[in-house]
Each structure stands twice: as structure tokens, then as C-alpha cells.
Length: 326
Ligand SMILES: O=C(O)C(=O)CO
Image 1 (tube, rainbow, N blue to C red):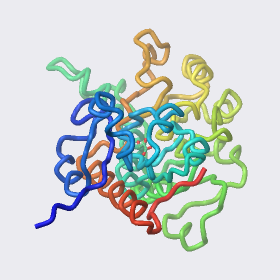
Image 2: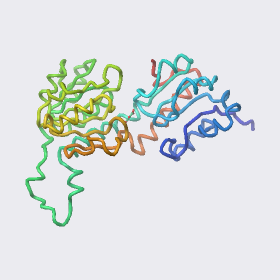
Image 3: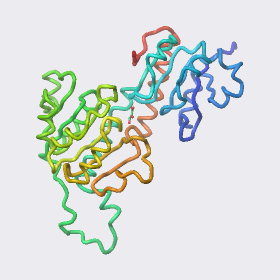
Image 4: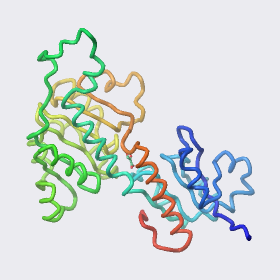
């Protein structure tokens, strides 16, 4: 039987911090001849005219002009998540290379992470877990937290993930406010009981929990600073599941130190991870997780499946399910 020549897919590594998961390799190899960056660099002359696609597993390899110039047959780059802020889309596109992200795969798990941070922070789960011992005064007033049911959640960014957060918050009997560039339809709003705030200020003044779910763009860089924090209730908690640089971290440190807001729960920071001596790590009224957003077995598998579908479409000249334009 004639051997079908598979298109060459470049990935950074396999099975390490910056590598595609070992569990996905077999699936990828059904569709591609997989090579790692190390193999590519070892035999650059051989591979450079063969690589047709790159699968970026959490920001690696770094896509810069030098790499793009060395890959004349590159047709498509598939990103493992939804956020494309680590890529120079204009540069990539100027090389005639298409790009795709994985918006469907990530939305439920990221929304779950947002809700988990909200609940854990409101009910002090992490503090409780660290403190528990045979001597813990289980009924002490020290353990009072915030009631989630009946509280107001303000969602900033009502895309796919924001909307899924709203669905979850509705099930927790929360009142939901949202602010977004585009208003959702009346049916969509009613389905989750979300009320649109034209002005971000109105949302901030009324919310007990404010969750950031916007993508990082030049418009949202440091969207949340001193002014926004001061508009929040002193009893409110800020939750960030978007990108670290959406928040002015210096302003956040000050707001948490001086009681401008009650607490924060962050799945994203800048840089990631924070250096050991970072002031955010010294605060008691903060919960920080290491960008857990999508990290479930199911979501990561779906991300790889979405990437493969996008790459194959691009290589076959078909419309890509999730093409991203500069
Ligand atoms: O999909 C992304 O870009 C994420 O960061 C999810 O956490």
C-alpha cells in the first residue's frame, strides 16, 4: 500500500512544561509528522522547507520574524487557548500564515475556574484548608465569609466565557450585571437573568463580586486601575480570569492593603508566575492560582482536537472553524 506523506507539524516539545501533552501525541501523529523544536534546530536545512503548521502549546515556541523567515512553507499556526495576546498577528499574517485559536474547548473550564475562585474566596476555602487542625475552633466567628446566594456579580466581558460564568452564577442565585462592548440579545440576557450596564461605573458601584473576563488588547491593557478599584464597594472582591495586565497590579496591591476593596482572587498575573518577593504574595486577603483556567483533561484534549481541525482545514484550503484575523 502506498504510504501517505503526512504534513509536518512543529511543536515546541513533548510532555514537559512547554510541551504538548504526551497523551495527545498519538492523536497528533494520526494526522501529522510531528517534529519538536529541538529536532528542527538540529537539522534546520532539512526541515525548514517541510514544516507546514505549528501547534503552539501555551505560548511556545515563540513566533518571531526569525522563525517565520526560516519556514517558507508554513501555512498555519494553531494556538492552544483562546487568548492571542502573546502573538504578533500582523507580523504572522504578513507572511501569509493563517492563525486559529480554540474558543470552544476553553470556555467551560475557564468559567468553572472563575466560579471556583469566587466561591473559594467568598467562603475562605483555601485559608480554611491551610488552617485546619485538631485545634481549629470550627464555629469561631473568625471563619465568617460572604454569602454568595443573593449577592451581585458584575461580569466585565460577556463573550463565550463570561456568558458561561453568568449561567453558573444564576444557578447560585446571584444577581448578575454585565458590561460588554456589544450588548447580548434580550433572549440571551433573560436566559441567565443578566442586566446590561452601559457604564462600567454602575456595575462597579453595585457589585459584591467583580469578575474580569475580557481579552487582553491595547484597549483593555490596565483597564482596571485605581479609579475602577475605588468605585468598587469596600466589601467587594475582584476576580480576574482574563489576563494579568488587564489589572494595574500596583493599584491592586494598594487597594488590598488599604481596604479600598475587601479581597481579590486571581488566576492570572504579570508576570506568571510572580517573583517570590512580589507584594501580592504577601497579602492575606488574596487568593492566587497558577493560571489554572483551562487545565482539565477534557479541555486540553478538546483544545488539541480543535487545533487539529483548524490546521487540517487550512492545509486543505477549507474555511477554518476558528480563524483569527489580525
Ligand atoms: O484560553 C486561554 O487563553 C486561557 O488563558 C485560558 O485560561
